[in-house]
Image (cartoon, rainbow, N blue to C red):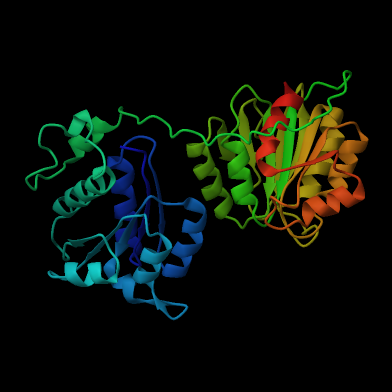
Amino acid sequence: MRNLRVFAIDNSITFQNTLVQELNTRLPAGSLVEHAAQPVEALNKMAVFKPNIIVLNFALGSLLVNQEKFLPLLAKKYSEVPIITYGILESGEKAAKILGASHYLKKPSVGQPMEPFLDNLMRTLLVSQTKDSAPTTAWSHGDIGGGAVVTKEIWRASKPVQPPPPPKPALSPIEPMINVPPNAAHIDLIAIGASTGGTEALSAIITRLEPPLPGIVIVQHIPPMFSRLFSERLNTESSLTVKEAVSGDIVLPNHVYIAPGAKHMTLSRMGTRYMLECKPGPPVHSVCPSVDVLFDSVADVAGNHAMGIILTGIGKDGAAGLLKMRNLGSPTIGQDAASSTVYGMPKAAFELGAVQQQLPLLSIPHAIYKIVR
């Protein structure tokens, strides 16, 4: 069974907290749980979290979002994702399935024990994720069939069994023409900036990179909370370690640090190593975090030992900072127009003379390897 990315939605904070705590306790190692209390909050979070299973209080399924009921909207938007609903109705299964749910469970009434409901939920989660594949050894003795209850102990027993990581999509067959001067400095840092379309572009790059590599620092224009969700998702998909940056982080090889929403990220020296500082500040180019703020500090601290990459996005944030990096001898790359969701930031940097070479998105991992190795 693959690692689960479960998104729980319940407007009762008490029940939601209980549900999330139990899911975190019972799910196999490597699984992630996120939650929301209302439909709009849930849709915003799920756009970044990318769940592979949704658990929903059925009472919220009929709330309107943009004149459409929430549950049918979810079923349409996440057509490949099982939606497990639960509610107080004894006979809610038919209505739930009409609206798009894959399962309906009876929620315990006030004063009733939670354990049977939670065991049933875990069994349903498992069945939803294994219906197209053979069960693992932990489930091979009739634990699923015959209406058997799946207990905490069985779920915990499955934790050491980790599925193999999904195969990475192939790199672009086009090897980019990268001119690396023979006297080029050793690259010990990679700095990347992105905005609109950047979460997809960054995912395409980071998931195609393998160690050994220098530390990578990233500014993606993204609100608070979503930067954490995005970091967690990338960490599950990548061979590198990905985290939301915090002040005091030492930049380590094979690690990726994403600036937290609403905080500028800058670089400083601590002995021979780089250290990050993340703090609120006035918007630059109307955004915080700003790519220019990061690139400017990278130029000051790392000089020509860093490389800079500017990806898809609206506006010109990052152009001036990337030019400063290039003027100090850093190799610089810009995403090309054809592969950009919005050819704004890369275009501004290219027209300013900050971009050494423009490349298609899927050629950028090749370029990173060639330059840093």
